[in-house]
Image (cartoon, rainbow, N blue to C red):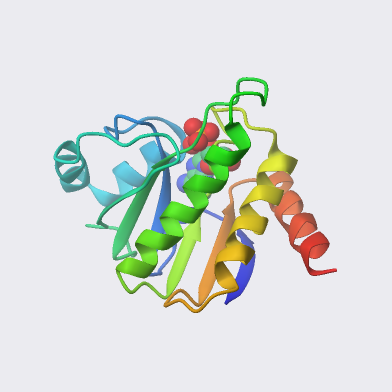
Length: 170
Ligand code: ADP
């Protein structure tokens, strides 16, 4: 599996599934969640209403509607509360459960935003290491997923991903 990083807007990416850093209601929010709902159109919210929310670290899948991506995989990452409340494990769960769902739907290419590092305030460098570590662990076994794109919305996040990838490969 190939892992690459890019700077850009995840709503513009043509791939099988994009991940949404959602909240547990799955009924939309700010940040990347708001951007995904705006780009997908109102049918996304309609489908999300049927899902009865989602627990932190779990994931649920919908269609992509007007997005270039076929699917959206919604995962509420953990809210950072100092690091003693299982935040790291929950963030790893989010990445892993998204990849499992992608695989269950035969997705080959999956794009992730930087889950939890916006409004949820998870420290960026730690989050980048967890993202890379979890994706690499998943990649070590056979899967339909053959490319993961880590989409950074700002250069600082891109830098953290690139360093975490370099660290993991060295
Ligand atoms: P969370 O609540 O999980 O912290 P946020 O949406 O607040 O989620 O932030 C997660 C990350 O998504 C942040 O790095 C933010 O800059 C980034 N982001 C916001 N909009 C987009 C977008 N359109 N494409 C990709 N990343 C985005």
